Image (cartoon, rainbow, N blue to C red; front, side):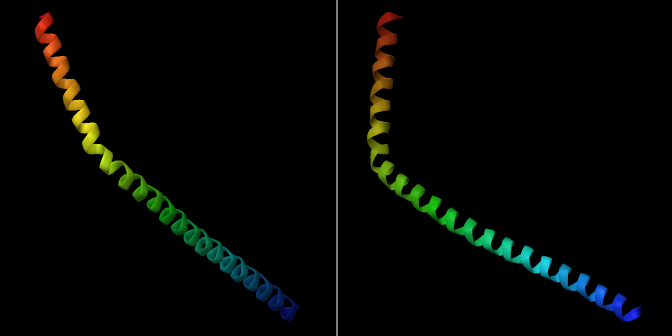
Length: 78
């Protein structure tokens, strides 16, 4: 009886270890995929910022011009 009980305990311990190993593999895979996705997002974000950066000066100038025009309109009609 004790040999059978010992084998059962070993089987349970082995099963727990295999489950633990599978869990760690899944976590590691998730971490790797997460890092890969974050790098892709960072790359796209950097490309966007580079494209927009040149336009920001023009956009800022456009808004300053409109602000001056609105200020003049308010002065005329105030």
